[in-house]
Length: 422
Image (cartoon, rainbow, N blue to C red; front, side, top):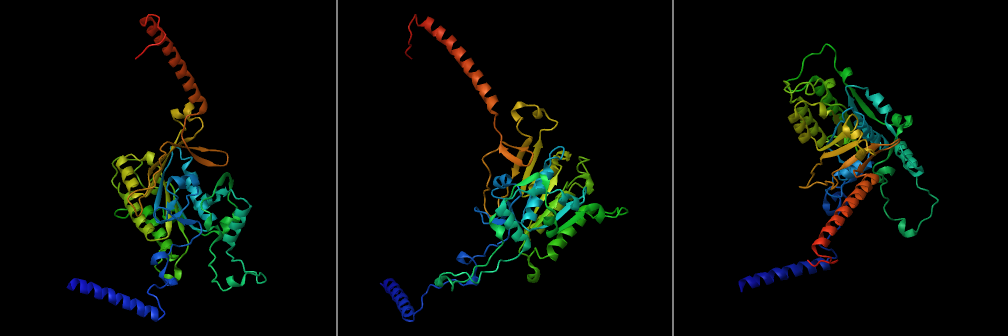
């Protein structure tokens, strides 16, 4: 009885509070202010050109420059992650993926950081492919690089009830466009390169010839590269630590031929080298820099040259996304009619699991790529029509012959009966 009285008192008190709130002209439900963020009071996603949130986990994504590869990776490459490209045997096709990634950054106005031990970064940028744009895309691209907001037409008349509505903040015009196609037979226009912002790291320029000393766990080349990346992230505010330098942009980092002897590493020359943990420790520190900044990184590595396969396994574990290219050049598959329409196979070895327990892994396992005159395409590997037709005809002929022989034997056993009951 006491419990019922208490419950009744609680109900009465809540009703009285509701009635007092109604008499006062206020409601217990209040509208969220603008400072509360997005729906539910959560943090609002950044609106950056060339990015979009993942439909699965809300992670901010950037395009790899190849829409087919974006689809295989679950929509794109997540900001703050590392994409490892295992180079093909003769390093013909892996530089294309590297250049697609860099060219996509220039089209969207992202900041680039290109590191190489073989070729000057300025020469690499000169060889980027030209985008395939229609008239509307060309206009959007001009608006992004000019960075001019169109002034409203004062003389334009609109309905009176819309005049008091708050004006929406206009973002980049190309933010709705995610991923572009490129023509590998043409080079990117010079005006786009001149209007872009990029940093170059050429290893011979950062190491003096008489420098022979090494750090305790990193080669001198890896150490200088980490210092250069860290300086670029912190100085331009990609980490978000300094509100005055806080960037609303993406830093795209590209490193070519990492782990090769050009970087001072000997994992491609010896199976049991003395410092076989230098590359893995470099990747461990690099991932820490990526996780705390608005940046995405692509690395190409000659995995087929690494003598100790345990090092390859550790490098894959330290990478967020791993894609391997297998070229048909110099192999038996080059003359095999089954693969006559393709130039190699592509292996998606690892896809990240970000903010969830599962990943957007594609059901298609057999993937092939081919380089046309203008485009690099990724397709599902299937039998050619003429080969499958030949196999079908031969199997039908064999089946008809075996049926005829079986029918003759059964008719002799059945003593002339045309139909047999089983």
